[in-house]
Length: 436
Image 1 (cartoon, one colour):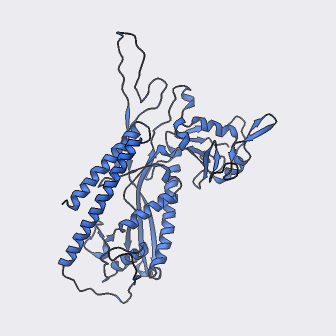
Image 2 (cartoon, rainbow, N blue to C red; image 1 turned 30 degrees about the vertical axis):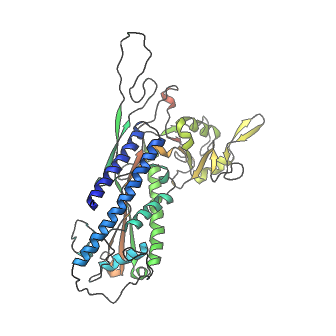
Image 3 (spheres, rainbow, N blue to C red; image 1 turned 90 degrees about the horizontal axis):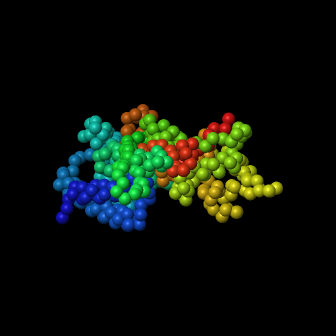
């Protein structure tokens, strides 16, 4: 029978195999085909099976170690936090709030460390309970990470890759292609040739997409009174930090500078910005704008694209139309009604209002985006640490949450098409120039 370490090594190898499948699809600038999807599902099924085995073996080791270690006398303070008797199981916490309260109790001088907590090395005084940290129980950690992606409108639509093991970054090979006018794949040339004619060599050109994990951090002070109510603690913490992390992650995908945070769409080299119309009034959006934006999106991105807007441009969209004879044809279709869709639509694609879009008249107030052209790398779940010392005299404990992610568009630049010229580039992401 394999050990937990051997199963972990197998999991790592399987995840690398899955990453290789994704990488090949990225190199070829396409989605996964049916056989690749079947293979990835088989790999993930095996990984889940191995993870269950690892959890069982590690639990067995912990129980064995606890039985072989003599109990030590522990002094417990009068202020004791009691938890509901119907917790989900004896080796798991019933809720995130219950676990956070147990972390606080373990950090108190002479406090009892709940055996359901897992000590986490912090690099300083790891043998001193009050100076150590505790990892969030795995099911809570995964659940909170999923909540972040569900709360954010954009993150869940991106191409997501996992960074596993001890790595803090990932490098993905991609095709370095800026123009298809004379070559394809960055340098490949095919040609029609006569018999016995000399052949000319060519080769593709590649580049490395490097993602280095950035830290998204949240800090929370919790009073002793709130910690006494584990259910309330979970509600306040989860709703607040999950919402904030989802908001900031979406903001980075749109506006990120790439310095200490992901590189956003509006600051990337692949953004195509469509010029305003001659004589166009400031702070307006007209039909010609969206028509030209739509024509600059990759043709194979249209079925996956969405319009991202600031809500203050909606009055412009409602009155937008194309003149036909003495009448007109509406372009913007509100949600429900004529469109029968949960989102309003432009050219049949969803129109999604987000807070992170720029205000009316500014570049970024309306963006046409295929978010499958944005890579988002993530590692593990949300890490949680706790200290009773920072706000000790105020009867408050401090909880810190960290999510490690990075992201950037797949392409480094816009693409010059085979026909159309360098002034008519195409991309996954199209914005409208400022109309001042």
